Every structure is written in C-alpha cells, then in structure tokens.
View 1 (tube, one colour):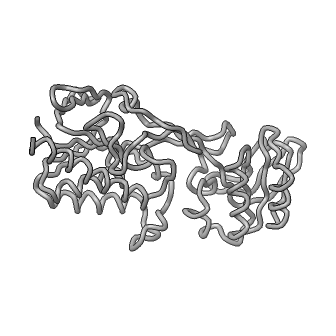
View 2 (cartoon, helix red, strand yellow):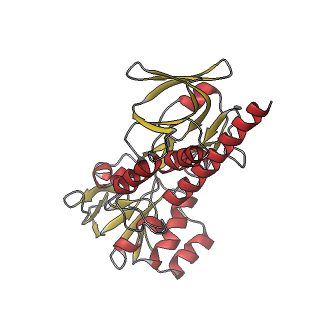
View 3 (tube, helix red, strand yellow):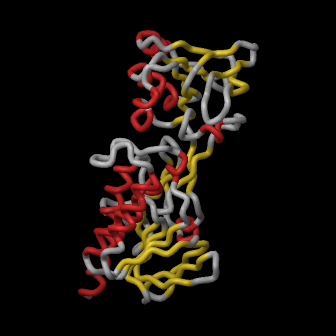
Length: 301
C-alpha cells in the first residue's frame, strides 16, 4: 500500500492523530479540505497553552510541527469516496487523485445546521454562539439570550447567568415543566414565549431580537444549539455504525477510536457526542495510537 494511514481531515483531531503516527515513523498523509468547523470563530479557548489563539494560527502551527517528521505529509483536497481494497482501503479525491492505505482515520468532522432564522449564519461564531464554555467569557456582563426548544436549550439557559443576565426564548411552543421553570426563576432567567422573527443590528454584531408580537428585546449575544451532521458520507459508505447524541449523530467507536469497521478509525467531533478543540486533540491521539496498534498486529501476524 502507498501509505500506512490516510487521515481525512486536517483539523485539530486529524493533525493530532497524524503526529502520533509520524512519531511512530509510519507513513501517514493528511488530506485537508481546508474548512475546519471553528473557522467562524475569532479564537479558541480552553486549550491549555493556546488560549485566545485564532483557529487558523493553531492549525498552521500544528501542520508545521507535523511536517518536521519525514514520514508525514499534508495534501490539500477533498475525499469523495472510500472503499475497501485488498487488505486496506482506496480513496478517491475530487480532483481525480487516488490514495491507497492500510488503515484509515476519519477526522473530517461535522457541520452545524442552524435554525432557519435569517441572520443567524452571518453572526455565527461572533454574536450568535453555541457554547458558554467556549465563548461566554468574551460576552460576560452583557445582555444574553438563548434559544430553547428542548432540554439542551434549558441546560444552556441555566448556565448562562454565570456570564450575564439571560433571556430564554422558548421555541416552537416548548414549555419547561414546573421544576425547570422554578430553577430558571431561581437563576434569574427571564422566559419569553413569543417567537423570535428577526435579529437586529448590523452583522456580525447583534443589538437584539424582534418578537412576533412586535416587541424588541435588547441582547448582545445569542446562544443557539445547532444540530450537527457529518461533513461527508464516507463513514456511511464504508458501513460504519453511528449512534445518536444530544446534538446529532456520531460514529460508534471503541476506546482507541476504531469504528465498527476494522481498520477504520474516527477522531474529533465525528467520533464523540461532546465537541471542543481539546477533546478533538485528545481523540486524535487515541485514534493515532489505535491505528498504530492495528498496523503492529497485522505486521506481527
């Protein structure tokens, strides 16, 4: 085979997996489509030693570190198909190139599917946010809003008062039960039941929201729980089993990130229900070690 491991995805998870394999002196290539999920954010947080670093800066440093190892390479491209081939896998790229590999790590990640409200996408990662732990400190002390149509939305609403005064906009007729309503009231969360129909202000800034009854509520940041879906169909075409998490599907993996298809591993947001850069880095290391151990098992017979 041309490579010991091909990694689809050059984000935090893919580069972390590649570094582990390169340090084990295995032939590893990362195929990077150049569209990391966090490209809309101005900085990453909760990454020890790299707090407040722009996402593109962190990834550039990771690529530089990886390419110091002689058995590692990174190519720009998009993998459009993957299939078993002999004792490994064959990958087809959008530009017509093909790669052969003994093992495969899927680290292409997931995409965010936002509620269908005009203006959300233009503010995503700036004033429309998904994670208080990732972005709450940067908007602390300001008027905050949160969409809630399910238990996850209420979970965010209960957290947010630690960062600022919070208004919870209930969506699609969703109503908290008496116990949740009591907890929200104890936290000082204001409930709004009128639907949000418009975001106010010049994107990417946010001045407030307009409600269906004509009222305007001033807020400076809005927390929205996106749904997620895989960025590509590679795992499905290979037959990898997925499970449903609170935000959407993720692949079923073992402790070292091997999927239900032998020789296929997954790392990053695609492999777990909780998503963040440090979790992606950790999962990439596990996937890299798992792929290396799988290669050793084959080589040892």
